[in-house]
Amino acid sequence: MPITLSEQDQLTLRTAAWGAVSLMSAAGAAGSAHQAAAEGSIALTSATGLVGHVLAKAPKGVKYGKTVAELADQVLPALTRSIGLLRQRDPAEAADFRRTVLVAVEASTRGEDRPAMAEMARKITAALDAAAVSPGADSLPAARKVGQDRPELDKLLQEMVDAGFVGVSLRVHDERGEWTGSAGTAELGGSESVPVDGHVRIGSNTKTFIATVVLQLVAEGRIVLDTPVDDYLPEFGLDRRITVRMLLQHTSGVFNFTGEYYEDGTFAPGIPATPAGREWVDNRFRTYRPEELVRLALSKPARFEPGTGWSYANTNYVLARLLIERVTGRPVAEEMHRLILGPLGLTGTVQPTTEIDIPSPHAHAYYRYEQDGTHKTVDTTRHNLSWISSGGDMISTTRDLHTFISALVGGKLLPAGLLAEMCTPEAKAGYGLGVFVQEVPGGGTVITHNGGMAGHAALMYSTPDGSTTLTAALNYVDDAALSMGAAFQQATQRLVAEVFGSGQAGPAQ
Image (tube, rainbow, N blue to C red; front, side, top):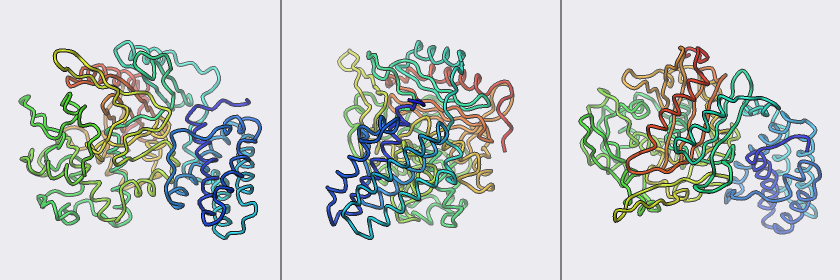
């Protein structure tokens, strides 16, 4: 093959091409839907060269939308991204992919003369030709340069595995181009290496996505930052002093429904979250409604008067989710796709509700707890994230996180004024609106958010201009004592110092 594609790249191509066939089949559902699918599938599997090698089998672990509209929203951006991806590596392969998909589309319409199928064929063709002007195409990562050597990063990854992580994958974009690497294994005690761009539960990185959607709705004039949240969600009886801005900046003072740690060392429990040991393990498939989480939090005393302090609370972002759904009348996942995932072609990013599965490929996550004096370790890769809701429920990849954060700070998602407000930190913790603004060794600033989720974790860092990014995915054994916490912090600090230190990070914009 003239070029090498990662597993995630191949999954993107399969999702796009096989999805196009599914679109044609769905569009002609009133007629010979099965025949359309069969004809298109034959055309895909008969392709030659690199495209034929990739498309010889359908994608695994991909759940297409249930309606034609949902399917189109998922597949059309993937087609755009696929062409952009291949065009960067080899224009001839991009042309081959385009030709293969169009042949499959034409085969699907054989013997059918339906306006719906003709219109869908037109949309698919337009998506294939949109990569040159797509806003997401510019941010597609370049191929790793042949012979590029970053031994200092390889060393740090191996040290993280030696410190106790099961596996870690890292993606860096800087003036030297793109670098990807991994260490450790995908499963505890296994031999399969960590997928370089596998799916991972990104935990609190979700908050940056949610904050961006809220600010996009501010830009659309549907939300006002300094309006009381009670004006939008009156059913909760929120303190009228709590504004939308306070939710995004964690200055509302509302109780954290996953539990509050106080300065004197005491802990006020909330729902059974991951520090709860076996109780969380036994409840990890339970479904919680967002409103249930909010009402639990509001039944507890506020941490401080609104606007007088800072305290990280997942409740703020569940309220932000409900705010999005109230002003738009649509589920948050639909707005996320309309405003971020679709425009950027983030085909590896998912916002679940009560689903327990994670798309392939992925590394496994684990949780350890004590029972009857012995330690038990369970695989927690599959579980229902409704217990954290929009405080940390999303799934993504290091590639998509890079595309997202570089597009965000690069001004592709928000107007300049709102982006500046997002990246203006409060004094106590350096938190803006859904992002941390941090100084790095050697001077300069990074825009960041990290997240951990019961054995999965994700890192996301960028210089304020998006020229240098670091994204990473980790899998490990979590426990009630958060015993990997210190190693996580130390490893993160060393990675940031290596990639952004010595003045490489720019000043805050």
